[in-house]
Length: 562
Image (cartoon, rainbow, N blue to C red):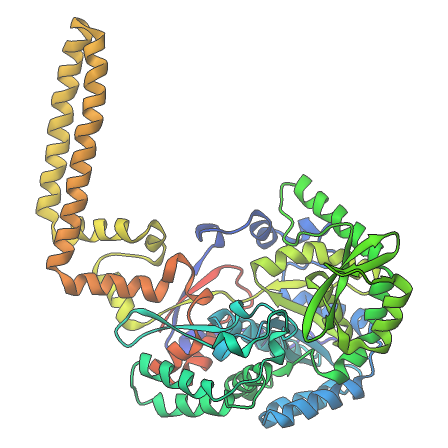
């Protein structure tokens, strides 16, 4: 029975920790897909692609009975594997307590996940986990037993995606540290990377880049305890996530764990046996999306296979050779669907799901009531829902994760001083500099430019009128000359902006810092900056502040002022 009491369990109160939060509609952010924006506006209108879409996060509670009825995995075996992993990772008691809760037949999971980024990767990784934590707590307050689970995508092989951590350096510039290429073997899952002594130098480099504060010793301790020689890349990621978020009861799952592979084997086998049907459905769904004016996030073909095969330390895609026979790319050996299905059931450690099957495997292993994802994940869930259907699994509703830009006080003062808003940065550095110069630093000179523009163009208008009567060809020549004159004036004005900034170096640094902090390399802060950048400046308090800033009722981007 689901209780409707304790409405305050979902209430977000950032003001109690001194935060001001502004909501910014995603429509005002650059590079947002049509499908994602449509989903945010009215998810239920897209039920053709998202069969279990909900308008409000609390509605997922109505799915509990269906989720539990469809759950066939041995809970005790699952939780035994999770408990063993978490004890090995020195997880806090709250995480272990939630694993014990997951053993109960009535408990569901709120899930999110991400690749095992260096030092946890971009900030949105933390926001994903906090979203899952908050909804799990919300459901518990409503009488639904729920735990938050973070799925580490350790099976992914894209080393370039996870080997770098970017931070705001002590001098305000954007800086990065990068794990060595030599740690990763081409084609191997990143979860199989083993840290060596080079990680100590990596941590030293990061600490040298970040500002020295009262929080630096604790940050160093966190990094060295999580990322130590001999640890696997997935283990290091898990240790740091648990250290930061374990007190909220977060459970972290590494799908490379052999016990979990064996639990997933029946689904692997069925997916292998139905590969042609899955591929055909995905191709048809991609066509449907495009015909509806959307885009297909995942490119698939009718010859694709839903599982990767791991041989000789590398991950290999399988493609259809002919009929029901599949082969590795650039390899002559062929396997029938029956052989591949039996192989996947017998040796699941040799297989991993592709992007269209991964969510189905995740929600087969876990009694998932909802998943938190970003824009790209929401887009490809429109295709993935077909795989759920074919394999007879209940489709999981996907909710938009918390999306935030953190504005620290120093940056907030810069914005206020020059009358800027976060959205002004989207116009680019030159546009912001021009505005600051013309409205604040060189207003008098800017007015002179305006006067010259007006005077010159008015005089040219009068001259053109006379020339048009005298000889239209001369009027046309004047138009070409006007463009050259205005081009020269615009160029001179731009040189003025730059010269003014050269004179006002302090202001120039303030503007540069604002861009680095809020819109680094023309992308959202959450997609570039690592959590260590905030930990160095604010300590672990920042985690609780971010938690309070997560508002499950909000489907906008949040601007969080510290």
